[in-house]
Structure formats: C-alpha cells, structure tokens
Image 1 (cartoon, rainbow, N blue to C red):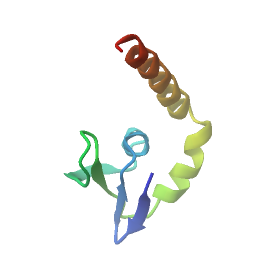
Image 2 (image 1 turned 45 degrees about the vertical axis):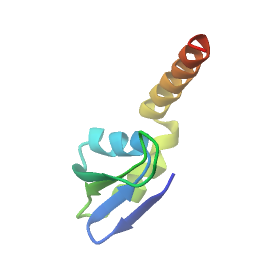
Image 3 (image 1 turned 30 degrees about the vertical axis):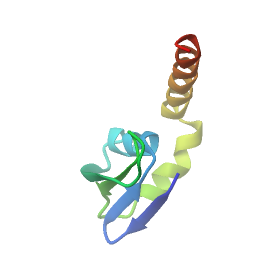
Image 4 (image 1 turned 90 degrees about the horizontal axis):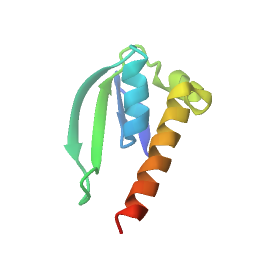
Length: 84
C-alpha cells in the first residue's frame, strides 16, 4: 500500500483505503491512472483540501469498513481456490 498526502490531494494504490475515505464523505474521487501491469494496478487521487486523510486512515484498522474488506478478501480467496 502506498499513500501520500500532498498539495490538497491524497494519492493511494489501496482501493480499500480510497473507498473508506470516500465513504466517510470527507473526500471526493478525482482521478485514477494505471501504474502497473496488473488489472488493478492504479494510483487513485482523492481531493483532500483540508489534509484530513491521515487522521481518517488512523481510524480505518478498527472500523466496520476494515472488517468488511477482510471478509470480502476471505470469501474471494475461497472462491479463487474453488475455481482452480
């Protein structure tokens, strides 16, 4: 996961973090661009004029959103194994 606040925007390659920040209503999606060869290798840019991303991210690990993301990843892993 790479994240960095700079000049009123927040950049990340972590889709879960980006989704959490937008769902908290504090940030607006600005853009995304491919940064790698994989199907989900993107750098996501969110508008963060007040610089609040780091504080919100500190709350993410114990949040309902983090538990939801972990559950989805677990189910996805099982489905991937079944599909082999």
